[in-house]
Length: 216
Image 1 (cartoon, rainbow, N blue to C red):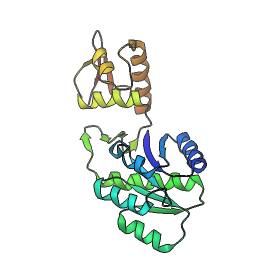
Image 2 (image 1 turned 30 degrees about the vertical axis):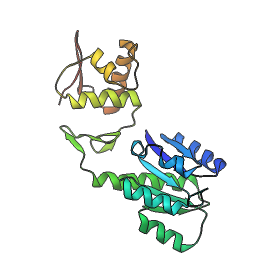
Image 3 (image 1 turned 60 degrees about the horizontal axis):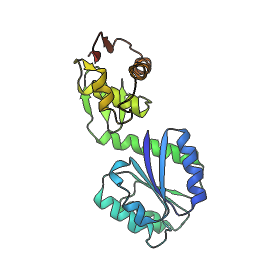
């Protein structure tokens, strides 16, 4: 799931956009106060949507502070139509500028395009058989897999310990999305879904009496 930090003081607009993006596997956390947004732990997000007209601090100042301190994509979303605001925002470190009003579909397309460009700049952790881990996404044969948090945790562990058998307990305990009380049947269901999404059931092998192994 893509995690987005939005700093937007129009709660109705923020809710509409958040609900639309949620349908496309994007979780938006919005702060109306820019100071709260800046202290929200920016490193845990994949992208920022930033308004310019904010209470107590101009959005251009927020943009500059984020760009100077973090390596994260920034999309300015603003009703301010002055071309100088757009130029200044891009010069201060924003990656894109969308004037309001706009169709949420356009924002979705811009997000995907911007994240794709950022990923191309990052050298991913390479593993055999065209499996790649890039931040909180896993690519197989060059295509990003649509995974639940639990599926991502389990597949990440299998990739990091490729060709080694991991016990069911190891996999469950290492997952932040599964409780220690999770039953083995839950893990079996996750592995079954992973095999289906990979399209190659032989990649994840069941080790009788032990657990599972990613065979590459």
